[in-house]
Image (cartoon, rainbow, N blue to C red; front, side, top):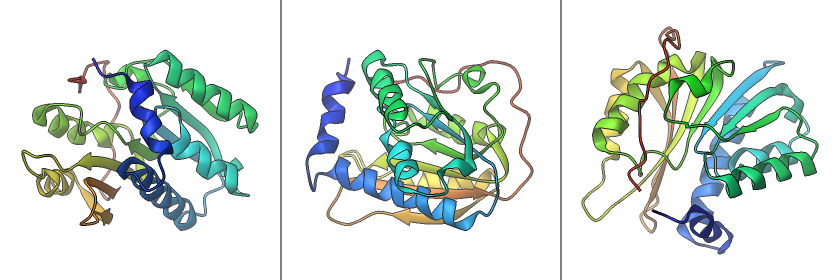
Length: 211
C-alpha cells in the first residue's frame, strides 16, 4: 500500500507537479469564493490529506468565516492529525476533520448538501468504473449551484480527462475551468451543478482506493 505521508511530502518540493497542482486547486477554491456572495457556505473534502488545499486558502482570506462548516474526510491517521493541528493553529473552528471513509455516502451525513465539493487526489486512485460512479453520486453531495473541484493525473496508459469531463456533462454539470499545462502530468477541473441536486440517500460505497 502507498505510504501517503511520504507521498504528501512531494507537495513541499518547489516546482514539483504536486506543488503546482495544489496551487491550481487553491486557485479554483479562491475563484469559487470570489464568485459567491453568500454569508454562509459549506465545504466537504474527500481524501483531504493534511487539509492544506482548503486550510491554506482560508488562512489568507479575510472572509474565511463565510465558510461556516467544512468537513474534511481523511482515513490516514497521520494526515488527519496534521490537518486538525493546522486548523487548530489558525483558529479555524469550522473545520471538522474526520477519519472516515470518503468513499461511503454515510460519511457525508450532516455535512451535505455542500456548496463546494473537493475531490482532489481521488480520481487517480480508483477504477474507471468507480470514477464514473463517483461523478454520478456527486449531485447527492451538492447544494444547488455547487462547484466540484477535482484532480486527475495523466498516466502512461493515457489521459482519461476527456471522458471525465463528458461524465460531468452527462450529470448536469457545466465546466467552470480546466487546468492542464503541457509540462505537467496533473489536470485540475472545476464543474458547477446546473440541475437540481438529489437526496443523499442510504449509506453505500461509491469508490474504493486501489492503492
